[in-house]
Length: 168
Image (cartoon, rainbow, N blue to C red):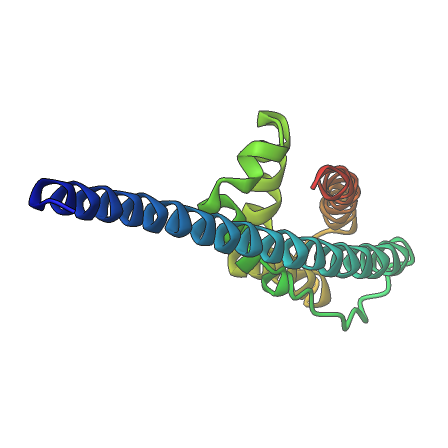
């Protein structure tokens, strides 16, 4: 084998090794990304199921609260823990762009409205209203309007969240 043939063989082997290394890197990164994507979607569904359970519990307690307000009973002891709504995997799915692939703009707007409602501020608002009702600083009619509106919003949020879960 001549010197030129050795150089050419070395060059071809090096280029082939480099291309194979790039190919191997691409395959491993794709597998890693797909595994991450699958994990995020799996736990995202779990987060949504948990949130639906929580919202249904809130709805049940709001129904009981409406009954008490209608009967002018000020003994309401439930504390609405709106800040318990989970958002970790929703945020991860947003970061990875997964929700943009699976949801429409309306779905994303609905999801955003849900997340904005169920935080520490929303928790404070409803619980302050209930406290005002217990302290007799808000009228029965005003409290009933507020809590019925809250119920209607919860029902809408539950419906929207179920539709979003079904698309994921």
